[in-house]
Image 1 (tube, rainbow, N blue to C red):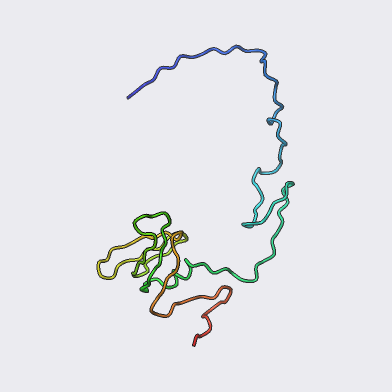
Image 2: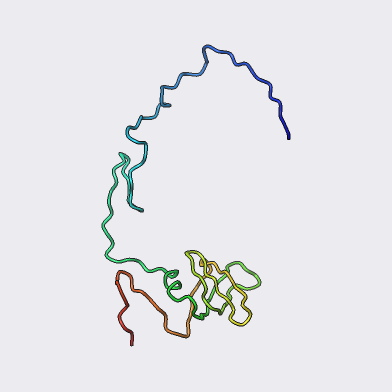
Length: 147
């Protein structure tokens, strides 16, 4: 085992040439538990610490990853763009949608079984040859029937 030897240094006691800081480092003291207040995500806070509530949204937003998650297992064609790529600027992938996250999707080739992870930052659009399941934002239950 490696043991390192340290030499103890003596520091002079007494007066320092640096001005003394008040207790608390000059910052205003807070009372309470020291925990910040619970704040809803995105709510602004004033300099005095007051939380400004935002009006409730009348509807929930729809995100592409949620649509993909509702349609896992379906075969799709995914169009991707890769900027500043000299070999291929745009590429098309076809495969079974296996997983979808906020920043990526995973598809697999039904013939070879090869799985490909693709970043959503490169995603342009997708097409499917079958109807998609889509839950309308803010609607509870099944979506209204289509044509």
